[in-house]
Structures are given as C-alpha cells and as structure tokens.
Image 1 (cartoon, rainbow, N blue to C red):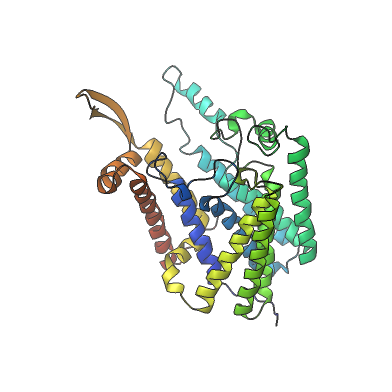
Image 2: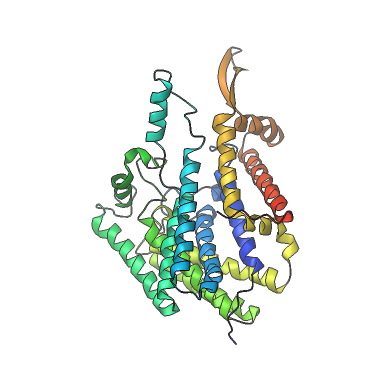
Length: 396
C-alpha cells in the first residue's frame, strides 16, 4: 500500500547527526600524525569509513529535500526556486567565511607590513570547501529533482549528470584521467578561481570539493531525493525498510562493478563512488528506520538526534573553534630538550589541551589523538543538546 506522507522520520535526523559527528571527529584529531587507519581518507583510489561520511550527508540532504519541498507540490516554481537559491547562497557564503576566518593573518611575514600581509592573506583564501560543495549540489540536485519530478525522469537526469562528469574526466584529462596528476578537475578549478585559491593538501593545486564534482555530487543528492520519495509514499515502515535494503544492496553492487572500469575515488566523486557510497547510505538509513522508527530505540540515539536538528551550525562552530584553538590562541613558551638545553617554541591551545589531557592520559599515540577528537565531538554535541532542549533551530 502506498500513500503520500510528510511525517518526520527520526531516523533521518539521527543519521544526519551521526554524519556531522563523524565529520567533526575526522577533522579534529589530536595529532595528524597519529590517526587510526579507518579515520583516514584513502590516499587516492579506494574507500575508507571516513570517505563515506560526506556522501552520507549529501544523501540525507536529498532525502530531507523530498520532505521539505512537498509543501511546494514537488514543483519548480517561484517559491521553490527562491528557497533553493537563497539557501544555496547562504550555505556557500558561510563556507567561504569559514575559510576566511579569523579574517586576518595569524602567521604574518615579519618582512611585510600589516597591509601587505593582509593582502597576501586575502589572495590565498580557499574558495571551495565542504559547505560550498553542499550548497552547489543542493542547488543543482534540487533543481533537477523539482524540474524532472517523476522518478524515471530523475533517474535519466542522474545518468546524464554522471555521463557528463565521466566524459569531461575521460576526454579532457591526461594520459591517466583518474590520477591525481592527470585529471582535469584540478585545472578547471585553477582556471576558474586561480591557483592561490585552490586546496593544495594533495601536494599540487587540486580541490576535492571543486566544480566538476558538483555534477556527480548532485547525483548523490538525487539518489537521496528518490529514497525520500519512497519513504514518503510507502505506508508500512517495515515495507520501506525492505525496499531500502534491496535498493541499497543493488547500488552497492553497482558501485563495486563500476569500480572495475572507473575507480572509486572520493576526491573526484567518480560514478563508482556515487553508487558505492550511496548503497551504504541507503542501507544505514534502512537500519536506523528499523531501530528507531519501528523498534522505538530513539532514546539511545538522542545526542545524534539533537545534532541532526542543527547540523550545519554545529559543523561551522566546530570549524571556528578549531581555528581559534589552533591558530588564534597561542603563546610563546620554553621546553627542555633531551640534551638539557632550553628551546623557545610557539604553543597553541589545541596542542596544549592534547598534550596536557590526552597525551597525559593515553600517550602520544592513536588513542590519545582519538580521545582529543572525541572530546571535541562531545563539546559540540553538548551544544546541540542545549539548543534542542531550548527548542532553538539555527538554519544555515
């Protein structure tokens, strides 16, 4: 039996909250040199549990969009377009401001004047990022979903976006179009925003949240939108779980098969990665619908439910405090060397907390580093619980 419903599924909030907790966890270890393997991203090809966190969130964005746009009759009209554009711009600008924070150079070049340092600071602000990717995929995915409306047409749209993404990678890339050095995604971003504004964490100018990945990232949103539609139009929740498990396993299998031809690479958001990560997203959602919305185990997951109601605000505040602790709050101190000599170093608040709390308890190792990350997650989970109890929802 199928009906249309817009009732809220707690499982969506919980999975969203768990995803945000995961994003905060992997972004804030006590030491970047001391991280357990599952909490690291794959160096390039492949997929670790950490590589599933971001697509989980984009998937939930799409699923939630299916519910929130029901009031617009799932149509692309002036009201729905206004909401799509307004929220996309807000999220993108928030991400840009987060990249720019604390809005001044914290490690200025002593050879330059303040004004010259500030100009250099502005010239090297990263344009793209996690929030910017969410904004662009929300806009593109939402527009496609409301424009195409019917599931079959949406699936055709998904194939079109993935085909366009693959064709650009294949025909415009180098000899090895899926490699770090040979892909075309990096050069596109450099051309659009300039080399100074592109992420360089891979050793070369390449942004894992760049423009080209918006095409395939939007398919992750559309996949979530389709699953949200199934949830809305299936009356029996246990039947919903069965459908989701089946679709999830099929998507997972498709991703594994595609990996033979197109490698699973998060940084390029390849088609195989879309279906592989999407399959896990659907399976996890089915599991939480069963545990929470059918078996009533909501209390166990309450902290994640609270996080899930203020997800982007929690993510932004975690990013702000990470920069405050790591770049802004710092001082000069002296340490005793092994040979008995004294050395002057710059200490920041993040390092001090890690050394005096986590290292002191568990040592300078993966466990100490994980403890710091868990403490960090706990702080922002507590903030989310406070907001929940005060019935405060801060929409970004």
